Image 1 (tube, rainbow, N blue to C red):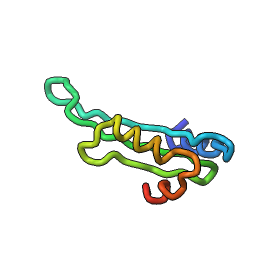
Image 2: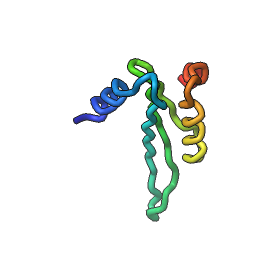
Image 3: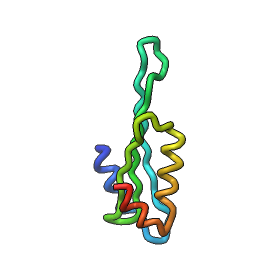
Length: 86
């Protein structure tokens, strides 16, 4: 099953009576010495069928700060923030 198919299935299963579902992807770029050089995060927040938003981390945004920002946007009754996130 492709990632696109899995995300579509997750969106269909998200209901109005539930908390939004959040899927976060973190890509870590490795330095030559094997340490983590930098990372980039993306998230999809599913509010309900046909209602999702996609977010990307800002340059130099800490992954934990990104997760906090995504959780804030995903809070119920936060449609205004969902639209500004796009």
